[in-house]
Image 1 (tube, rainbow, N blue to C red):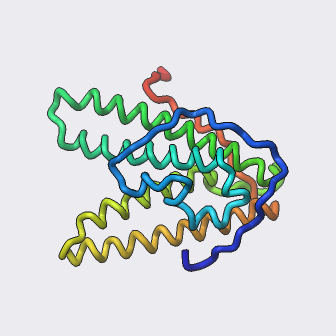
Image 2: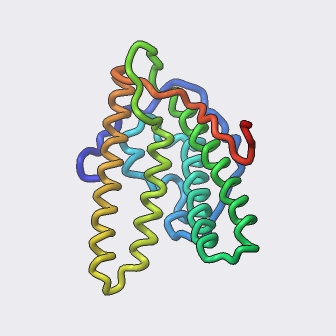
Length: 199
């Protein structure tokens, strides 16, 4: 991160919240293996109480789920007609778990700032922004694998890294507004319906 690395506080005084989502692992992306929030350490520098074990565990679960979903989406593009329904169901299940993990991250982080209903909300929750950061990190890693002597791919990696830095910066600014009480988070419930009809 090039713009700011200021930490906005380390102790909320709130009790620890235990993780409820199942642990998910993936070996498809080398960035997943590090654990303990290494994939988003720049963003964690701008988040209050970023090194709580429960938060780090859920963040790593989210990144692993996103890596599995990336792989599933690659597989479905290459699959035969008979394989597609099973992979699509897998993607739906991963999406459901992903949204549950984002919501869990938001509930953990909500303890770090007061929710004043009289101030405007930020456009997305910090959990959602961290999810986008995870996908961006995966996009960088997978694009780097394609570089070789390809100048266009190398240029794309540079653009992706700038986008990653901009997202990290925007997360830090949003957290600063939340801590200062200038903004509030949107409601964390995501209301996603995977595999359920509303008709």
